[in-house]
Amino acid sequence: MVAISPQSEETNKRMIEAHGLTFDILWDQNNNVTRKFGITFSFPDYLVEVYKEMGNNFPETNQHDAWELPMPARYIIDQEGIIRYAEVNPDYKDRPEPGHTVAALKAI
Image 1 (cartoon, one colour):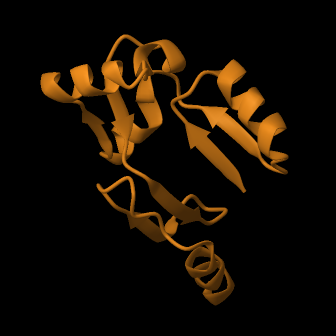
Image 2 (cartoon, rainbow, N blue to C red):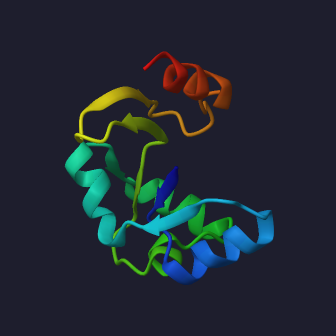
């Protein structure tokens, strides 16, 4: 299992250490992977201002000039590269339960 994040390698390393993660977080530099999956979105100008006011600076954190992020997604990809399970939701607050992913993995 790996996670893929638009956050820089340094930010990902801090995340692994802070949370005691036992899997790698790979840097999706410039959202190249998520763009191929068609799940990258750009922030409208009004939301950029809201996030800036809250102290968030995605271009700085991600070392990428664009104000964009991927939608939360989980995939199970087999050894032949075939996607066997996918769950994507444009609402970043609605994350899939880990048990759903584990159940899907066991069913394959």
